[in-house]
Image (cartoon, rainbow, N blue to C red; front, side, top):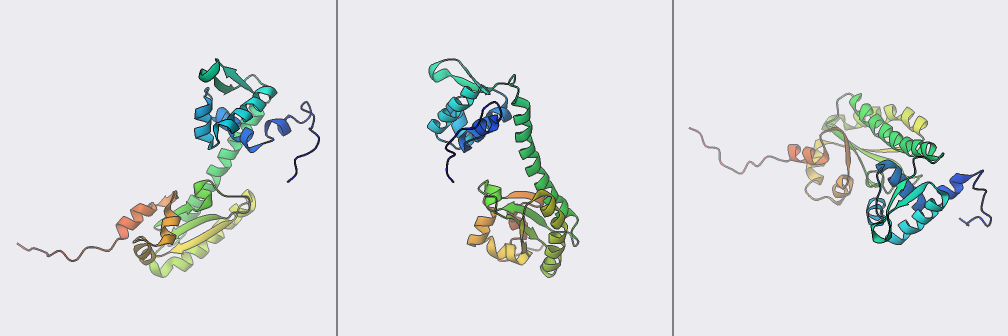
Amino acid sequence: MRTPSRKESFLQFPTSWLLGTPGSVRVLRELMGRGDALAVSGLARQTGLNAQTVRNALADLARCGVVEALGQGRSRLYRADVAHPLYLPLATLYQSETERADLVLAAVADAAGHVTPRPLGAWVYGAAARGEDAPESAIEVALVAADEQVEVAVTRFRAILGPVEQVQRVTFSVAGLAPSDVRRMAAGDPWWDGATDGAIPVFGESPDELAASLAPRDRSRPTFQR
């Protein structure tokens, strides 16, 4: 994507300046979400950006007046200027991001709760759980149900999630697992490792809890009778 050759008017289109780079978007989101003043090092840690990228973003945001600096030198802190006329609209935008993500996760949990037979657990995994998803990425969900009921449970789960996909403009990819699959894969299967790394449990037991509760019993120990 080419960078536009001509800047837009700051008076008419201030968001082109304020949200014009991923660095500025991340830094401003963090400052507005936290509410307190942060140092460059703290912003770098929270946003996953390097310190120089944070400094560049802060310089652009301060130039636009939506961020203010406190102190001098290495002790300088930065915070969002709540008196700026665009503060509330921008804060509302960022809040809407959080609310939408929470709503999607809640919808997945609600869908799992309406599946019969009742699933043993459900969690979001993959890129969406790790925060690495792109616009075209599907939200991957694992659903665990009784061995002989997995296909029916997954079919009903997908049907309930259909309207959520239409309203929220997302796509779900559902992996159905039986207890026998959990027992087998939890022993070291690469797919299980990837599907549980950073997983977000939304219904029933978490992946670790399921693996522990479904683990084969140790029958090698002798039973003593009195």
